[in-house]
Image 1: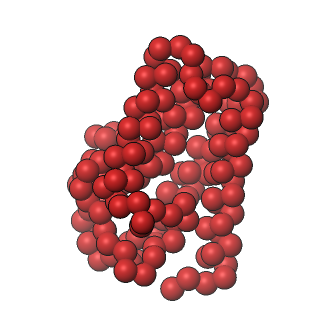
Image 2: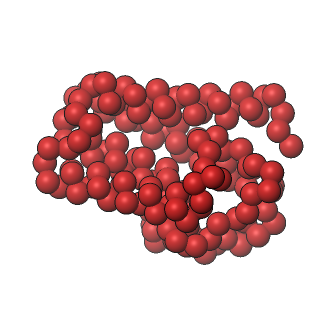
Length: 149
């Protein structure tokens, strides 16, 4: 059940996430110049796109809250990682920071990473409460990095 406090937490996490992404966009190029980092950025876009297509775009939400009528997705990239969209955001943002590194951009990336980890843990609590099968799914997949974490 969603409470006003849980909604505030969800909106705060999303606000921090988008604020950090906007700060990265405002402090450097949006497209990496170096081939390695551009490849990372393309891989992040591909992973994010695959996750959205697997989940179905109409079910997409930036909020970690579980919507009524949701289903537990375990196909596509979700077979190996439970949060491929967060992984895509972190990979793409890292590519941009590595391509044009500054202390400010590293600080913003750190805020983004911490925020997404907090959001991920919060979302997992909500998913565990909403789906009895989520605990078993956690045993067969990793959070962000296949076979690692």
